[in-house]
Image 1: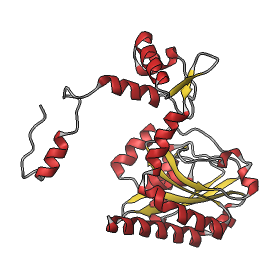
Image 2: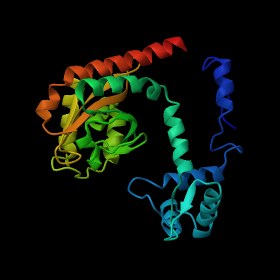
Image 3: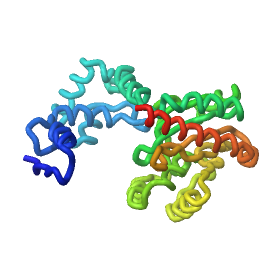
Length: 281
């Protein structure tokens, strides 16, 4: 049984809430649910289609056990089988993630800020948060028609991008606590996406130190050739950086830098909206 909390540790309400959360040591913890969710998490941007053998190897389970979980998830509509007899996430699984994002206060507050930023700059405007060694797109307003035809800017809500070669990713790494940053740096694979992508952790660490000092991040042909972006931090009431807001376009980073005042104004506006929302709750 978990150690009982004393009144000196937390309030009675907090104690009751803590007791209601199952832990690995409690009989209420469901290993079957854990395994089912692990199957769903195995599908990533790099591994969108997986077979039973691949899933079993990834999760360290037998093929028969893995097959049982996959069949259950398929019957419930969260996985769908392809003609290759392999599986992919279904729209129902995507709906769960989308619902989580759209119930986030950041999503609700970001839209008007992004629309205004796009109106002032004509650039693709994005808000994202840090999730491990990736960033997750919370919302995005598209830029010009020319940019929409470029696959690297074809982002949607829930899209994931690497941290080391994106302006938003590098900015959020720069503002992470030193222990968290060290862990994330050790987990980050410095894949060379664009011609100018950083492939040295020493170089990345040096750039992160500079970013935390000047409060702005740039990406110049790091994620894709000719794709430039600048990002600014979004803070909560306690002045903790919780997200990044960015503008991106194909062309010159020099031209994009001239739009910095609009980006900083949008970051301040979004931070203010988040603070006002908390005050009203």
